[in-house]
Length: 473
Image (cartoon, rainbow, N blue to C red; front, side, top):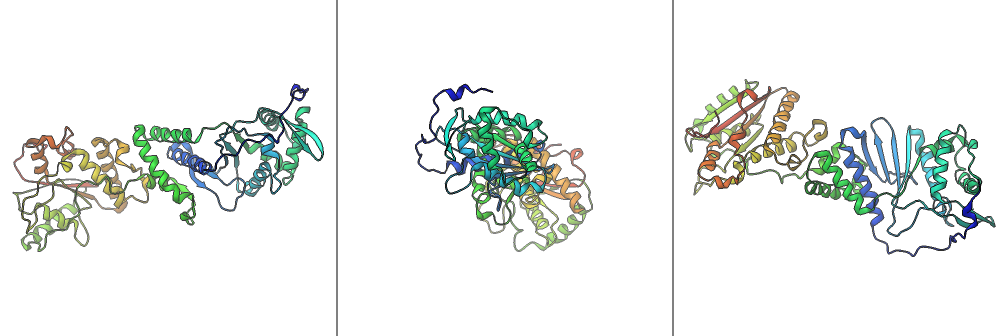
């Protein structure tokens, strides 16, 4: 094929692009690409099992490795520029005076891992493929290297149909470039060269660093069905973990799994509302010990249901719930107090907490405690929402997950999960006497589970003073 390009003046390779000040953009570009795949991994349909940044002892293709559930590994070598520089034929195939060409590095890296199974190799860059031919001196001969964009398009087509590397016949104006490629691939056998070229993808003209960051946030938003501002907070949590995932701080745990990604998205402690882990008062009134023992025996005999613990103010309802939770073998697994309780010796009667009177506070707190106490190492496996705001703090969705996870916990342990909700009268008081405390949000009274909806393996103790019409019937 004739080449009209050769008849035109072609720029010299010596016309270099001015150097740019060195910032950390290339490192963040690489890390953000890995972060994008980590987010993608959280889509069950992605087929991604893990993502590794800077794979040890695999030079040339080690920037990002994506391991897939079907056994494939996808290796990314990342090249970023802040200058308007194209990815040229010479940049890819010419060897610097003190090293190997990028093409040779890619080939040797591929050879290191190809025995592991099905391998894809990607050269990922925000540069565009070169559009111009370039004149160079090779072995004292004036040679014109073709535009990489045209060369790669042609070669990719021929590689797909060739049965042997020697069957590939490039157009005459690309033949010098093809011979240079073959020379740079001489560490591979003929069969390996063909396999390598079939596995190689050049992903050029990819998003800039800011756009890749936006794409990652939008993907997180789409996977979890959350607004972009909430997704941005989630992405910030992942950014924090990059300090460990991309450095020696990670130790021997180099792959980021779905479980690891879920743990990274958490905001431990920040979604816990109120104080619910206090011990029973000391001294514990002996008159209550027998009642606590009988109540423990009763609740442990149930497989599902609700027990209503009621009595006048100061009779010890909260102390009894605390005693059940603080036994040597606790009966209560999770508890929520809608107020700070009155204890012996307290100088004043505590005021109700407006924060703990809402449905979102109740179910969000219980979900947070389930997540931290029982599911912290199997968030993905158990389908645990990693953050309450990823459920938009919707009481119905929060409650649904609490009931599901409580039932799963009961199945795993072979005994019912017992949840105590104390202070219903305080929630009722907030709803009637101080509705402004709720700020228009549903009261926890409106979100209690009806007896017929309590799942198998879950038992509730609900406690409060008698006589409030706001209690659900």
